[in-house]
Amino acid sequence: MEVAGKGGSITCDGLTKGVKSWSLDLVGDALETTDYADAGVRTYIVGCTGWTGSCEINWDTANTITVGTVIAALVFTIAAAEHYDGEAIVTSISVSSSFDGIVTASISFQGSGACTLESAV
Image 1 (cartoon, rainbow, N blue to C red):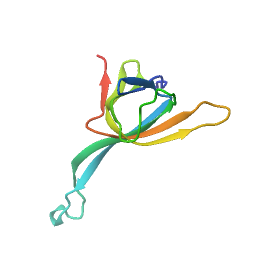
Image 2 (image 1 turned 30 degrees about the vertical axis):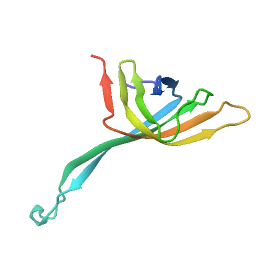
Image 3 (image 1 turned 45 degrees about the vertical axis):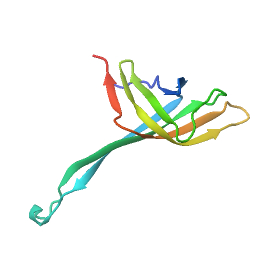
Image 4 (image 1 turned 135 degrees about the vertical axis):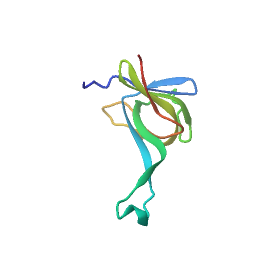
């Protein structure tokens, strides 16, 4: 079933910011174990997993998010009962402004620990 993106937030130093858009990249290493006994067919085992992501927020004067900030509570909602959450470190911020719009910030982050998909039962 398809869903409409309707939610997301960042909590940093007690300040919760709404998110305009977000993306997550969940990745895992495949470590090659191929040797001569594998008869020319590559073999692998699971290595480390991790995640990165980015989001766009409306900039405001109460902003406390800076490069190097640890974001203790990232929550990205997929549907009413499903969301990803985790802790991350801000790796870059790009602020944009135009004469006919509001100031926005694109924030990139590196996950620290697991990023889990939570579902209400």
